[in-house]
Image (tube, rainbow, N blue to C red; front, side, top):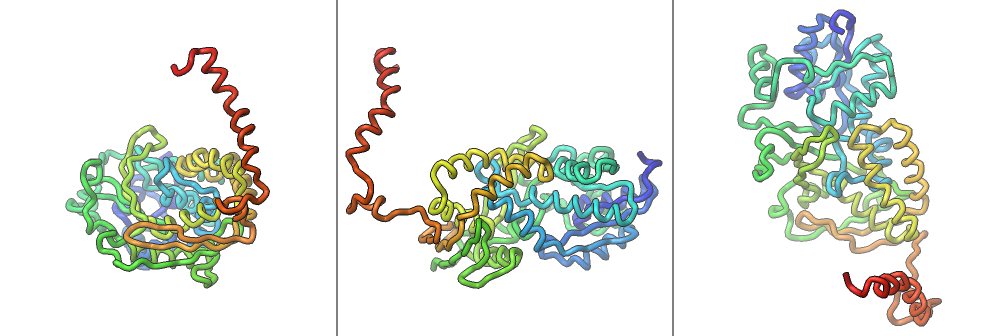
Amino acid sequence: MKNSVSKIVLAYSGGLDTSVILYYLRERYQCEVIAFIADLGQEENLKEIRDRALATGASKAYVEDVKEEFVRDYVFPMMRAGAIYEGVYLLGTSIARPLIAKKQIEIAEKEGADAVAHGATGKGNDQVRFELTYYALKPDIQVIAPWREWEFVGRRDLIEYAKKHNIPVEASEEKPYSIDRNVLHTSYEGGILEDPWTEPPEDMFLNTVSPEKAPDTPEYVEIEFEEGNPVAVNGEKLSPYKLLARLNTLGSRHGIGRADVVENRYVGIKNRGVYETPGGTIIYTAHRALEGLTLDREVLHLRDSLIPRYSELVYYGYWFSPERKMLQAAMDEVQKNVTGIVRLKLYKGAVHVVGRRSPYSLFDADLASFEKSGDYNQQDATGFIRVNALRLKTIARKRGGLS
């Protein structure tokens, strides 16, 4: 591949890995390298990162504001599906990769580049997420994954390489963990976090106060949904990005959204990740509460049975696969009546649902009340129970009771 590559588009974050990679690609392939920097709401100085890319040798550096597109077309569809990986992880890194990869392909076509590159390691999930997207959108693209071809073993090697070649990076021997950040979450992994018994240091967290230091007074917030999408906070209509950013501010103040997870990577390795997802945790909790009010039992249970599969598709990198699109259509059909308002109480790291209402509510006070009968005849329950107990009674008779 070395002799056939003339121009590479690199997904560039300005961190340790991609800064070293930019320099490495120029040296190894002796070709033009274009840096692509996605503004995903990571709250970094992107002009400074662009300047760093150019100083490290990039021929061009694209900076694109994709915040609204990210939340509207990636985060919200995923949240409409109730996606959560292994019951804990709200997929903040996973959902950003297909958008970054898509933009790389667009730039590659515009610039006539014949290759794209990323900074994902050969042990992780991101390499799969990036490359499945590349091939789904441009099957003939050449892909360069430096972590799978160079001699470096770990991040300490990169730190030494950066020092040797005067590449400006923020990582150090004292804080060698990796950070990934966007408007949905901040993630931390590697380095001192590789021991699952070690508690993350408090000064590591960038996006939330500790629950112990959160306000002693709870804060109430109301979130309005339309067809499964959050559209307003406390009565104020907001764009997707601004809404999530507003909830991040509220959640961060109350220490909401921290998660310390040992998860199963697609490649078969267990990995420890620490996450902060304040606004996403609030939306997830509110959305689930509104679904409980508006969705039929069998529809809800069937949809819930599909969540693990949908979440795997996002986590593994199959965002542009036909099966994810098929599931998305089903999930969105379910959301047509998920419209209403949820009231929440934020306090000391927890999100408490304290109220919900909807014009499509299936809650019937007369049926639910202990004081009224409504259309429900309690005597009907006798036959219902007898019919459902029939197989259990049969097993007991044939096998002699408990076994």
